[in-house]
Image (tube, rainbow, N blue to C red; front, top):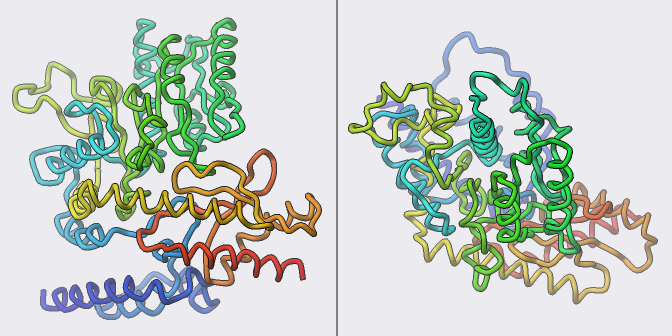
Length: 472
């Protein structure tokens, strides 16, 4: 135990020193060939090694090569820096090492509070039992779509858990062209088939076109299909766009479809000044996916799915017959009755600590700060003569192009496609690319609480410098 005590203190110092030094180092660096070989080709050890030796390897071979998301000039994907409180308690959750499938212990009881806090933050109605923590929005979407599928087959007088989808009309799923790929993956995994996944066009601001949604649903209904699931976005990963949630809720309700919202990244955007009307209708969803490990900064993995009615997911996943449930002792049952996972990690401690450390006011400040920076970056782009803004800066994502006046459109497209990797390799900033309306685009996602306006200037200068290297 003395070895563990000494190594534990060393590990804590190592973590603190790593976090303290991030801002002064490169955002990202390629892995040296010797370290790459060591990381990927280690032989299985015959004898065990001291804890101190393991920490030495972590310090020398792993910590020098982070993904980059802890740095204030990391603008890639939707990956936040870890919250200090989440880092602090992660080893304690591991020390307890419970399975949070159910039972009466701190892990399961704290999850009730963590889930309720998340619902309260975004203004989603919460009934006890109507939500659980997941590995992320992909699993949350699988759980939500499976619940919608069970409800639809129940309404036809069958139980999909017994009969599968055999003998039933095709069930159709609707997601916008800017929707996340996790919806398609969930449809394929659950046997619904991508053939019956409808991609709904978007408008000029990359929001779901509700007229097109209505047309697609009407056509499918007339063809004998059953519109099952409409997935709207409350903050897309490409542009941060928020679909017209209230209108979509009405269309889904009109056709008896399940209304799901992917708020994995953007649901917390409702906390920004003046954002409330943009999110009207969020509270009408049958299910909502959100990721505390995104904007909130909870160390991965920590996702969440919320439901209006807890009976739906329990009917979909519980293997405890109703006559064996001790409802007087525990009306909510086990978390494993609401999703596919039986062994579940103690995610709640990281979520609880992060929210508890920031408080609602601190979370609002984080959302407002990063949203303001996105608006500032958009203004800097519009004021320049070599950048072009591609979409309104709604949340903390900015989509744009580097467009030097000397380049023709085809050359500019190739340049923008090559820029993210070139910028990353320079090490002073990190951003990623995408495609919008068929053309190569750059996207900067701002999530770090310590990012400054000066960092935005560095980003644009780094893009220009990288472009110069490419075109030279």
